[in-house]
Every structure is written in structure tokens, then in C-alpha cells.
Image: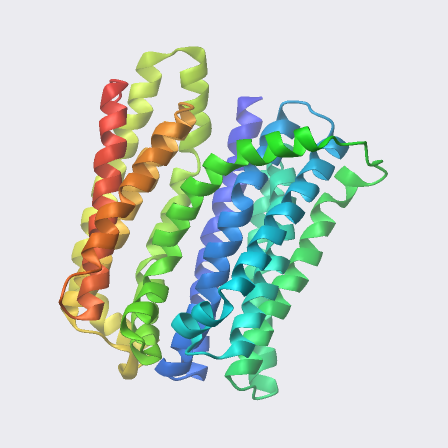
Amino acid sequence: MYTSIALEIGYLGIGILISGVLGLIYYIVMAHYLNPKYFGIFSTFFFSIMIIGRFLSYGIKINIARRISAGEKINRVLVTALLSSLIVLTFFIVGYFKMFDYISTILFDGNAQFSKLLVFGVIFFIPFMLIEGVLQGKKHMKKIGLQKIIGDLLKILSFFVVVHYKLDILGVLVSVVAFIFIFSIVSFLFVFDDIRGITPPTIRFGCIKEFIGESLLISIIHGCVMFVFFGPPVVIKIMSGSFELTGMFAATFTLLKTPVILYEAVLISILPNVSKASTEGDENKLLNYIKYSKIITIVVVLVFVVASTIFGTKIIEILYGEEYVMERVHIFLISLIISLYTFASLYNEILIGMNRVKEATVSWIVAFIPFVISLSLSIDDVFKTEIAFIVYNLMVVIFLKYYLKMERRL
């Protein structure tokens, strides 16, 4: 059985590797099609959808996977998840439009069309996450890997449509929303056999309330993780008000975080192994998993920071063009953000694998306080944002490591 699980995880890792490369190609060709200013609008739009969409749906996705893998009837799980998602989406839409003018101003300089499109992007993104939850619950890791590859191929296909019709920035954003919508429909085909013929059961409101409550902590953790993974370009826009700076920063950030996406292919194997060792009470195996994961991560991070600082400027110039090149000091600071994020992700996976979700949640929430304080510094907006994210990631690492030490795991 464990050989089969390892094989499925291997397929998922391959899917992540290929998807990461295809995703980078999409960003590069889009940056060449647009200029830094319009690439800044595109990045603000795309990353905002990723942050909000994942925050609203990730906990529900994990809850779907957990319940299905535990043997709960799939029809009951799906209907509860769909109703829960509708409730969450309703609160989001009401809150979004109550703050519409403010959100539109800080993200898109008051452009209402961009802001309304963002809502559609979030709505269309959520079904994909629920479908992935079903695939995880059924342990179809190979299908998830294939799903990720298809998603990035659809991104590139949408870019060809943009080029063919010579679309302006509004058309580009519409293509993003269309890609997400089509991707959710295509993803449905992956679970068609699993959900075909199911009959919807009667669900009490108490079950929905319990489902949302169970999903909340995971959503908070993942929302914070995704804020670090996708948020820096968005925060640059909010702090500086410059789409051009945002575009330049986003180009560097998307390039440098690609090795982290590829490294996820390694990290993805940690959670099931830690969970298995923790459940079986195998202390030595658990400590070995943590020890070797930490050593590998340290080596990867050191090589990454040095290589990024030395070669980053030239690589960005070759791949994106001279107009996207930032000073070397910014490349160094962005590499630090990503490196600390990698450690935070590692420790986060270990804690969650040991069923310490509350401790992980506290770490991410409390670390947000020094992040906000750092944003009040009276220095250059880009430096301020970079320092704030370094502080945030560093504090998360410290808190997570503290909880692991309490468990005598580090």
C-alpha cells in the first residue's frame, strides 16, 4: 500500500515540476507582450485572485479530502462542501462590494472594470479547489499532477489567444478569468467517474456550520502562506502606488520563486511520511525525516541565495528584458524572502503532519504584527516591503521552530 502511495506522490511531484516550468514560461512571455506598467496590473490582478481564492477555499478543500479519505460518503461531503462554499462566497461578495471603492483604489487606481473582473476570477477559481479536494481524498495524486500540467498549458494557450487578437490590458485580464473558468470545467472531468450518479442527501445547517468551523483554521494558515507566496507584488502596488515598480518586482519575484515551486516536489513527500511516523509512534523515524528534510532545505537555500545574488540580474535581463532588471540588493532581499518562506513551509508541513494545526495557526497570525509594524518604516517603499516580508517569514520560522522544540522535534 505504501509503495502505491509513494508512487502516486512521485507522479504529483513530477506534475509540480512540469507545472512550475510551464508557469514561469507563461509569466515570461506575458511580460514580453506587456510593458512593466501593464505587467504590474496583470500581476496585481492574478496574484490577488490566487490569494483570495485560496484563502476562501483551501480549508474546505482539505476538509473534503480528509472526510472522503476517512470513508465518509462522497455525496454527503460534496453537498456540505458546496453549501459551505456558497455561504463563504456570499460573505466575501457582500464584504467586497461594501469596500469596493477602497479595494478598487488601492489595487487598480480606481478602475472598476478590473475590480469587478477580480470577483469573477475568485468565483471561478473555487470549484477547481473543491475538485482537487475530491482527488486528494480519493488519493488520485497522479490526476492532481496531470491537472496542474493542464492548468498551465491552458495558461499558455490563453496567451496565444491574447497575442492573436492583440488584446489590450483589459483583454488580458479577461483572458485570465476565462482560463480559470475553463480550467475549472476541465478539472471536473477528472472527478466525473467518482461523482457520477450520486444523489444529494439532506444536510442540516449544523453540519454546514461544523464543516466551515473545521475548515477555518486551515484556511487561515494557508491564506497566510499564500499571502507570502503571492502577496509581495500586491503589497508593492499598495505601498508605492506604482504599477511599473510592481511589474519589475513581480518579474524578479516570479522567477526567483520558481525553484521553490520545484522544491515543493520534494516537500510534498514530507507530510504523509511525518503523519505516518507520528501516528505509529516511531520516534526515530520521525526525527530522521525532520533532520534530513532540514539539512536538504539548508543546502538548497544557501545555493539558491548565492546563485540568485550573483547571476540573478543577468538571468532576468536575458529572460524578461532590460526594462525589468532591478538592483542586485533587491534580488538578494527577494531571495531571502523566498528562502525564509521555504523554511516556514517545511516547519509548517511538519507541525500539521503532527496534527498541531492550532500551533501553526498562532505562529502565522502573531507574526503578522511585526509585519504590519515594518510597513510603517519611513524608507523606500520597495525596501520597506522586502524588509516586512523578511521579518514576517523570520518570525514565523522562529515561532514554528519553538513549537517543534516544545515537542522535542528540533
